[in-house]
Amino acid sequence: MHDVLEILAVLVLAIGAVLSVAAITTGWIMPGRGRAKVLRPRVWGYGTLAAMAGIGTYLFVGPLQGPDMGDFPVAMSGMAVFAVGLSIQRQAMKPARKTSS
Image (cartoon, rainbow, N blue to C red; front, side):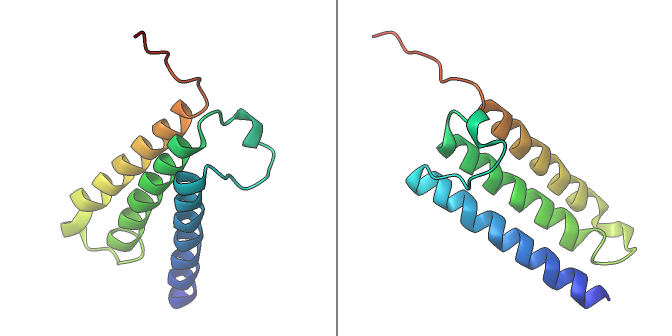
């Protein structure tokens, strides 16, 4: 069962990374219910990429690795990066600031 969870986690992280790179490079976001809320797709892509890196670090250093507490700070750092990625995604739902020239 543990191997199945690792494969599933890698698959979800890879799909998230591909979708975030698509958003960064082309501005395309997968159709869905929340798509209309995203005003800046490239910022959304950067947030998703950061979130995927953070949750991947958390999963593979923390729970999927085992009960070793030696890597606890690294796993929690991954969770912090995940939270930063979510906040970047939240910023993508706000209009860009206008610069005065």
